[in-house]
Length: 249
Image 1 (tube, rainbow, N blue to C red):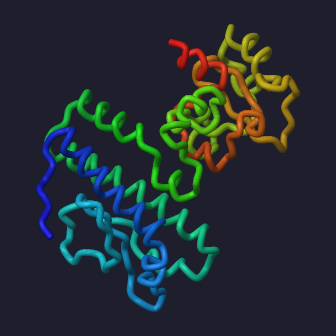
Image 2 (cartoon, rainbow, N blue to C red):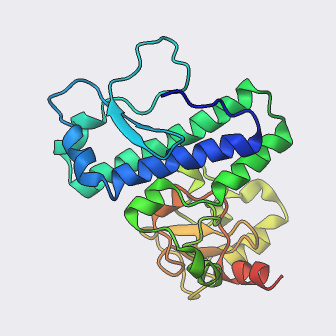
């Protein structure tokens, strides 16, 4: 089926939402049908979402290079090698990546400028990711105010900054010892980074910590209900206190 090619930010976002809705169906309400179609004995299969909110499991397109970015290849091969929920989460993560690739492919193709790209990403970022929907970590709209209050599950929260060697900028220890060359910032970081901003306890090497991108205080992941896995998908983390300030404004 031919679909109209989106050319404006609004049209690209509409295309994104339609494809996203189709993929969510495949991984939730249609999950049994999707599971059965992903036979590991078949060739490399991909999960496609379409702008009309439908989905399809099929072989990759033969055209090289393809007209659009292609979804993850061979999702069926991993189906029986892990628990179903883990496999669905893996497919969800790859589906999120594919949706962004398609959206920004259209943006590049039709010459979106900096402001248009930023606006497109902000519109996309206001929606829960497929991964969040599939794993149940996404908040419903009526709960968004509560999400701001506890600062833990809001999708607009972000990742810890200054990553060092950790993936996605998630930092596993407070900043003082890693920022010896930062001059006058050391004293402030020593005071704010040595203890958790929520419970006041000291840092331990085997604990996961995350830094607020607004006030730059550090928190136990457990205290603000952020896990390392959840932090992988956070763009900018705001602690409960900073989230409450934003809500009051």
